[in-house]
Image (cartoon, rainbow, N blue to C red):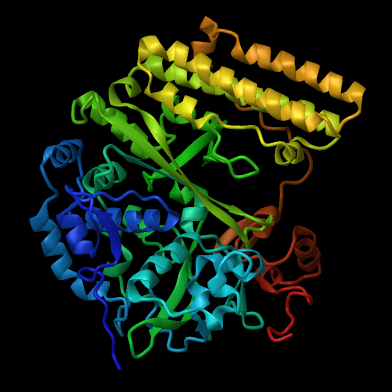
Length: 567
């Protein structure tokens, strides 16, 4: 039996109407009614859906200039005619079960050996998710069937957040070793930190704040405008924003039963990003970044205990380039497009691993908080004030953990996991919503509540220490807290100049040897770090010194890795 599930018209996206009623809608209705629908994006699955809607809107009618964006923002609704024409053109590509172009899947896969549980993102956690998800308690084969809409949402989540490591190879993949492919990457949503903006929660504003003006090159097409991918995995750079937002991380094929519910699937390695961070920066406006000298790295918003750290958001207020969405929103306020009294809210999503390889999912953490009133966000002095209080908070955390680490004789990373310093979310929200004259009062209240919480936590933890150690620790922490709550000095509000990069070390001896592999010329260290390399640097060096071809040396697993899959 041939099944069909049209994601454009079938109800699978949860929204709230203007009267507060809950309703599930298809992609077409979501875009046509975006001006009156509310989409809270309260769980990671919602964020994956939102990013899809941003890509569909961008491909159909996304503004290509500031003037177009401003007109779209001021318009009562999105351009329904352009959206309808686009969706009509590509209607057959949004069928979840299409025999030739299944949505975000690989039509070339005909065997579906995995159970329904393999689509559940919780299966990527420790123990296959059996400890956290009752539906996985008896294994992926016994997992209940997915209704088509739920399967579509799970598919988006899996494509965005899949883990790294060893994956099942598609039959015929040239890189297969014992039925496996090594060196798979994490999904693109795991490669960065998502940061989305909204005003009053309406879907229209979320889509426009997530789609900054962009004129796509001819080669940049979303997944549904491309031919269905072949079964083998590829390594390539994204052609542009739409390619990245719909990146096929895995080759998946869903198999429905007679009722149209997903009961089995194929799941294999998909496309890999060449230089995941470098090739992503600048393409995804909904990604957040931090500066480390001349480099930009994904913004890490979480502690080792996965709590949001408000102080780590400070660069979003003062560092251009930390977020494309934030930069454009501030520019739109300056142009007069966004109401200066509007309050912007931010949603951050970050995935963490339970192991150092990123092959076990520790969790996907979503936080929502106020970002600031529009008119304040374009006030440089106000932004420096928020950043100054955030720096005080960051310095307090760092110094307290150093003292705890010294008392416990462990590293600061271990200390951060031993003692959870509270985050005064309510006071931080008050700080970022305070107007200029009230900012100092709100900032002092934020630091005072933070210091009181730290003092209480440290006193409780230090009871396990001997009395002399306890006295030394509490005295040191008290000094840190007194410094933290002291009034800001003028120099605290002066942005520090970026440090000059250290001079390159002088090298002696022969230059590093290079090796031809994977269509590139790579040093030994670069070859060892290549995603397709499955051995460590020492093994790689030993093999190449023995005369082995560099590419073969990098892709041939060690004996321990190359055991048959059924052992």
